[in-house]
Length: 341
Image (cartoon, rainbow, N blue to C red; front, side, top):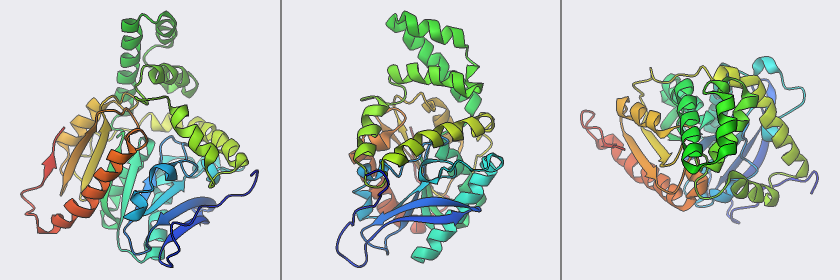
């Protein structure tokens, strides 16, 4: 239990893949979990949140249905989860390096599964990487799927703070109001102070709507065979390390100038998301030109519809990527399909 880790087989078929693999990416060892009913299925690479919120240790629980239709790849990014090491270079903890890492992972998967293109799914911090990858390397990807889409960090953090303070006042929660007022709306620049705002944002259901994050994630991680006890400690250390060394750069992210992508774009947003406020994602979506784009609301979710409403989320993705994508080739380029918010 302390050191052993494995991923269970999907079936006895020789075509299935269930592999927990360590590879060298960007000059350092990083971990991939690859699971699918057949190696011939389309590959779907997940870019987790954070920075540092690795998901190999819990995401497979929510992705079983996807594994029947895709080779689902969870990647614990540099400095996070299984890929965290004490000697991880802080000089390499920057957005450009992560984009380079993601491209290298993409090309590794293309070669391993003999596919010219793959799908990418970006959640929260991962949605920054996803948009930048789709913009720079459209030839590598079938489509981009965004969850809890980041747009403009400063605007988003201020909206998040305003929402949390407003909820505290309306609820008459004196302690929350007092702590938030003491922070101020621009306190998010200090990642240590950000934790206080996020604590109250979680309390007022702006992160997870149905139940707190720890009740959704922690039980699955404890029961995970992909993470052992030492890996759970590594997960915590990696999360703290990544935020500490990347948050200042992340705060400067602004994707508002991205108004056109050459790949289909599918955004999935929780109706109650104020971790990455949905208003900014709506504006981004409406201003974006793409060969195909759709928007899907998740009414019982905040920032994590893939974990809060996994059945609906998985069905939605399967439909989009196995049906709507099939029709893209016969669509007139002047008649792009769009489902609006």
